[in-house]
Length: 451
Ligand code: UD1
Ligand code: MG
Image (cartoon, rainbow, N blue to C red; front, side, top):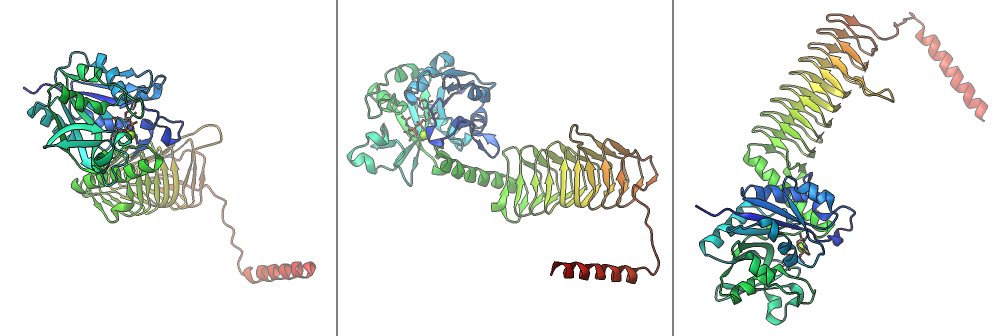
């Protein structure tokens, strides 16, 4: 049986280049903190344990690691020093120990597994994930001689021919659990930055007669995030991955580059998405539903064969059942739409329950806020709400009722009733020409007075 893996996630660096009050690893990608992506990717390995290394006083970062434990690296003296801080928490772990960075969220589970498996198979004391960098200048260089990894030279310490090596260190390392304590313990800080470099573990393992290996991977996975610009690059890469996964799940996107997904967006097969659609957190869309162009959708479960948009906005706490139609310039907030209900044009439905097959006319407003409290509107099944009506909550409209156009509904309407909530129309026969003449004279008079 394979010995289990342990994972150490380093997240105690200062992250100064982000120029942010927020710790770097808490900056979001696809609406989820960077560190949550890292944890999801390593958790998929089903490791025996995951240990985070955090800076002193980083309560939010510690909370983001939950339920996994963290240890504090008292001073940021380098990656080797940070990894050493985790040794106590690892206990007597004999299997491979993967060390990953909290600021490299694109590293895939598959690459991590490949590194651990290769280390096991080749009985390597140390293994690293490497890649050919287009611009290797920010990275440690992997020095390979006769097909063997002999050492890693940090960029600032590289001299001569080492500078032109483009095989770069991703930062992901796998150490044999039986040797990790002695290797990390031997790391010194005699280098340009006066830091304890984790990367020195390679040369130290070799000097002790052990084997070190490099496993090559693709650059797109290993881009670390040190600045806002790199955050944006990672976001792009992640969006592309999420869209690819959606395609593979059977989703059609007519202009995929303009569709923005959250890490937790769930799209079923035969969902169609038009251009310029943003999915905020907490959205699931069932089979056969179409989301037309320019929609902003967040916190909602959308059922099957529904049509949403174009230009619809759905806000959190909503639930849209099967076969619902939500048309242009319709906003939903904490609103439930029953099966087959329709709100096709220009409506605000906030804190409302709309029953099955009910029709909400153009311009309908669920008046949910009185300046102090939010109140709910209940519309039962098969109700017809005429255009330009205000439903002043709290208010209920019974099954099969009709609300006539332009009504301001302030009292409950019983099932089957017709409600008129508007002034009665007055029609005066033959009076239009006279009215027009009067209005014309008045305008002429005002013009004269101005001169
Ligand atoms: C590191 C590697 C470099 C590699 C590059 C990949 C070392 C010495 N260098 O350099 O070979 O090419 O990553 O991006 O390992 N951290 C701590 N405590 C510390 C210092 C860092 O927890 O004292 C954490 C940071 O939060 C970060 C990670 O370690 O998650 C990497 O630190 P960073 O300073 O970004 O290392 P690089 O200079 O990028
Ligand atoms: Mg870095």
